[in-house]
Amino acid sequence: MTAKGHMFLATALAYLPINYIANTYSHVEAAISLSMIVLGSLLPDIDEPKSYIGQKAFYLSYPLKLFGLKHRTITHWLITPVLIGLVGYYFVEHELLSLILLSIAFGIFAHDIGDLLTNGGINGFLFPFFRNTKIGLLPRVLRFETFSVTEMFFIILLIGFNAYFYSKILVQIV
Image (cartoon, rainbow, N blue to C red):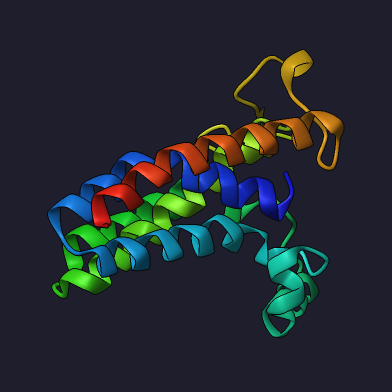
């Protein structure tokens, strides 16, 4: 999935949590959380120097590649956002820092959902269980290629969803 697809999918999946944060905490915290979700939705591709975030953070992506980290491995495993989320929830005392870590974990998980919709799926997603099993969310015939017309159509639907539902949050703010 492209960077745009990951960002729009993450923001679509985050609508309910962001709405809750905006109504329970502050709008600033909701904006920070949404920003961290978007960042988290890009972070798993840091292991690929040609990716959007890999190009921006080349000082991280090239060394990761040089050390042999393969794409869609540890950065795409379910255990990664789970561990980040557990640290944010149980071990961080500062409320805003906890929210940031939980938001990043949510974004990483949303990224993984996006990749599970593609033909490539994720190998070892359930690490340490089923280490060499490629997993996808849909049957192979319903998955799509990155940069395909199907993905572009999916992104357009996500943009419409985001515009509609986030406009409702903006109305509440004003």
